[in-house]
Image (cartoon, helix red, strand yellow):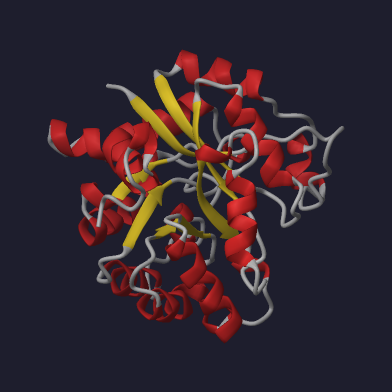
Length: 289
């Protein structure tokens, strides 16, 4: 089955620091992860297209990712970063689209999980920025934690013309073995039609050394029930996933967790939802709504 990897990262520490990689627990990530490294994983596991996602909230990273996409037949989309509170955001998006690889810009994202204000997404300046993202025909990736789901749901409801893509299922407390209130909050978000989610990042929310697909299954089942395969997409979260698993292990776990779906439903999770949502292969973005 062809695979579109809807969520991975790349960085070159000689070009740009990744200041979030601190402490001994994540020290293995403090090295370069380049397009050639990712291509080796993709080719080994049947990945035909990918979406590369920003990691730092600085203006310079997105043009760098777009340039990588311009020279690659593997990267089909870039989820970059721009300041949502900038009154000139629409112009900034236009500038990004004019750069080499600008046609591959499919969405924006901000590390909302790091904002001290739990209602940051509902600030008037942020909502204006989200409306500008919608007006530009892009989608918006939500990188939040489980505790921020309720606030995110309010923001999603306030901008119904924008497709929101939930990264990593909002990082459920898998290692702790808890499912509520995460499951209830996730269902409320999924009830809004302008939402899509990624089956990604779960292995690093589990016990890194001792997880099995069975540990992830209750959370994947809630997501499948809430969003349905047509609004759920696979993402490896490479190389962050390597804290807990190899690329092959992550893909195998996702296949295991979707094993009871029909062939058409699995094709949606592993290819179709990402293609339509991000407007890959020349399709308009947000097509899964």
